[in-house]
Length: 55
Image 1 (spheres, rainbow, N blue to C red):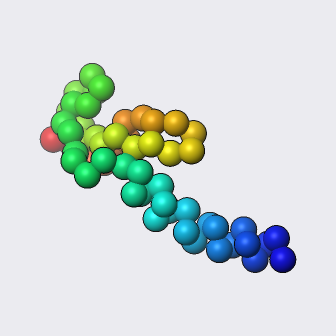
Image 2 (cartoon, rainbow, N blue to C red):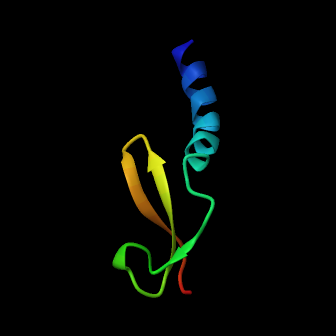
C-alpha cells in the first residue's frame, strides 16, 4: 500500500514544486551573469533556479 502512495506522490510532486516558483524570469539573478533564473521555494528551501543558458 505504501508503494502505491509513493507512486502517486511522485506524480503529484513536480506540479506542486512548480507552483512554488515565481512566474517571472530574471536575467543575472543573484549575481550570476548571462543566465535566466527564477526564484523557487521547494521543500529543501528557496533558491534561484537556472532556466535558460543565456539572456
